[in-house]
Length: 350
Image 1: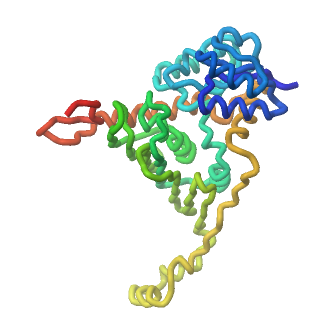
Image 2: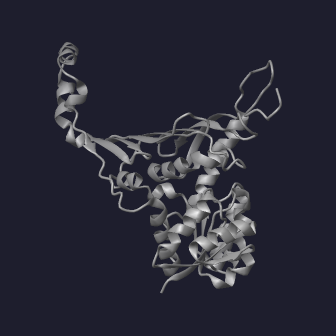
Image 3: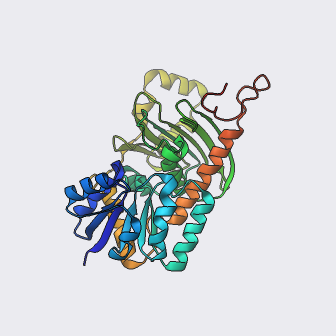
């Protein structure tokens, strides 16, 4: 029997969620909800469901809902659903307020409600392919840059874009225990940072360097993992990747260790190092889109009452680290004593 589901928020992502749910046999799209009645009715007409303007009016009519409203409204919109014990998928980030996120999790536990966070990148086929190698990284480097989209202007680039990579890195690092964070950011268009870089050291020794920008000319989404077992390089956008495994290149390693400096110098003149290395292409299954995979996992968790693939606790861990990065941005001393500027500049101030 199909679960009765609603989508709250009829913006760009809400429309995509409504389309995916309307195509799934496991879901019955009961309705869509938006404070803007025209927006709700337009999507409802397109997806042959009912339009609502108040969350309270649909709580008793659904088993689960997807919350796709601006971040600052996440908790207020999700609360009546969670209080009723309904399953909720909340778009990333879980919330911009760490304490509000903790309170929502406590409420969900008390009501037995499943709460999943929309970190869709977890369902990206290249991420799923990468995680199959079970690499224990020592160093992680990620870049996520794109032109300004004029969306999510209520938060900075850390909560808008970097949050994707924060979640993936927390998963790959194998721990949520952070020893230190250093970060720098610049705001250009508004009060929030538009470009940011953070360096994170985890308790297990793993180090991550993350860069995010929403003011780039091109779009680039890449991650590289360095470990004792292998090197992985992944392009999220192109859905491609390579893996260089130590076990597959032992002959080359032994040769290099035994050779003297002069021998290596002579070898360098005779051949290209890249030609000696055995490189495997990442096997990527592109048969299903990430948003649909995410919806399938969410509905399965609601049906079983089980912990979701990306739990509220996972989402909160990402928000907590993002909050720490934003705090470090604000502490970064830019201009020293002449101006005393600290952190991202406020619009209109010197």
